Length: 348
Image (cartoon, rainbow, N blue to C red; front, side, top):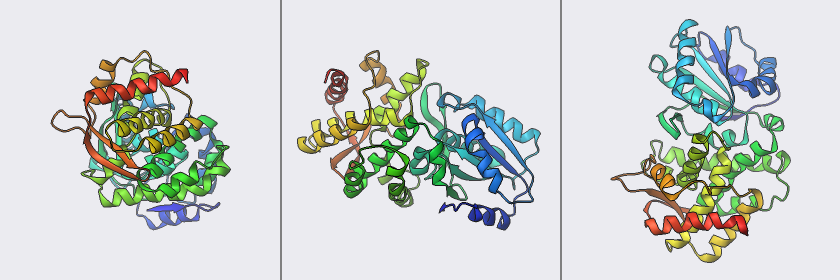
C-alpha cells in the first residue's frame, strides 16, 4: 500500500503499466503544479493519455463547490470507471481528490502522491476522504482506500518551514498516542528541517497504518488518532469562518496542548507528564490568538464533532505518553478550564 519511490519513479511506472486504466487525471493545486508536477511528469512513463486538473491552494477550497467543478470536468472529459486519479499534493488534495474519485460514477481508482509532511505521515494514509461543510471540518466524506500511496521524500524540500512544522504536529501526536520512543526521538530535534525529520517519517506512517488496519471504519481504536483534533478542529474552523485560515498542524498543536491539560484535569495523566508534553509542544509552535473565540463559539463546534454520540462530546485523551483512550466524556467545567489554560499561555 505504501511505497517509497526511487528517483526514477520505477515503482509508479510499474503500477501504471500493470493496471488496466483507460486514462489518467492528475489533481494538483497551484503550488504542487509548480514545484512537484514537473518531477512527476518527467519521470512518469505511460502510453495512457492524461489530463491535469488544477485547483487553487488552501483549505478554503475543500468544499462542495470545488468538488462539483471537478465532477463536471471529469464528465466533460468523458472519464469512465476505469480512469485513474492521481492526487499530487498535501492534505487538501488527498482529501478532496479521494472524495471526488470515490463518489464519481460510484467510484474511480485513485492513488495518493503526498507532497507535504502532513500528508505523508497522516492525511494520505487511512482511506478517509472529505470536504468541509460551511466552516465545519471534513463533515462530508467517505471511507475509500487509495490503490497505492507513493512517497517521494524529496518533495519535502519544496516546502516552506510553516508547512513542515504543520506536518510535524501529526508526528508528535503519533508518538503521544502510540509510541513513547517515537515521541522521545522527535523531541530531540532542535532544528526542525527536512534532514531532521526524514528518518522518522516511516515510523509515523507505520503508526497511522497500524491503527487504521485494526479499525478502518473508526469504531474504536482509530478514534485515538483524533487526539488534539477535537479542540484543534474547532479552532481551525473558527479561523476559517473568520477568513483567517491557519494550517492544520498549527491548530492540532494548540488542540494537543488543550487536550493534554484536559487529560490532567480529568485525572488521566500525571501533572509531570502533562507539563513535559506541553513544554515540548510549545518549543515548536507559537501561541495562537484565540481571544476572539468565546466558549460558546467553541462548544457549538465541539457539539458537532463527528466522534460525538448521544449529544455528548467524545474526547480522545492521554493516560500516559504513548497511550491514549477514546470515547471519554469530560465535564464542561474542565473543558472550559483547559481552554482558559491555553488562553493564559500568551502571557507566559
